[in-house]
Length: 117
Image (cartoon, rainbow, N blue to C red; front, side, top):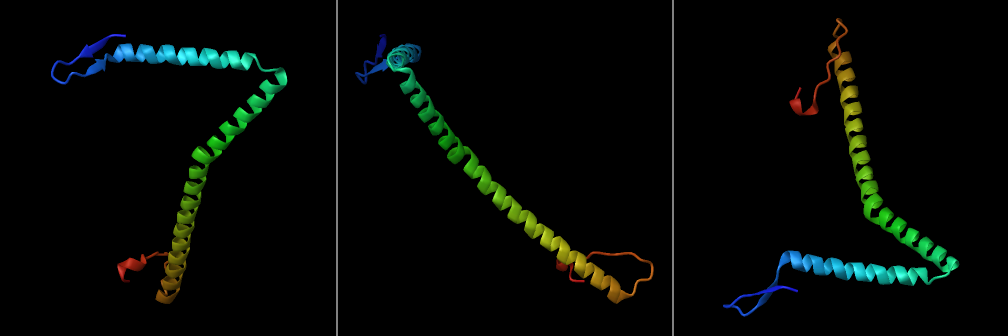
């Protein structure tokens, strides 16, 4: 492993590409030892291991991905319901104002409650 010695600090720094290759070799060794351990398992144990891994993946997927999306959907559905309520209220107010004004031309004008009319 190559290292760079700094004369002022007296510290050794690993070069990034060397450190990455060392990590890759270590990871490869760990994966090979894990593969050997899985190969040593019986077929039944492998099936149980696969089932356990699938359960872990599903739980992570449901909790980390789907739960936030479900919460966001509920929030947005609430916002849509509020907007629909405001639209219905404004529509009723517009119809009531139209009837009160006695407009004979048949136009329906919806006025915002903030406009002060």
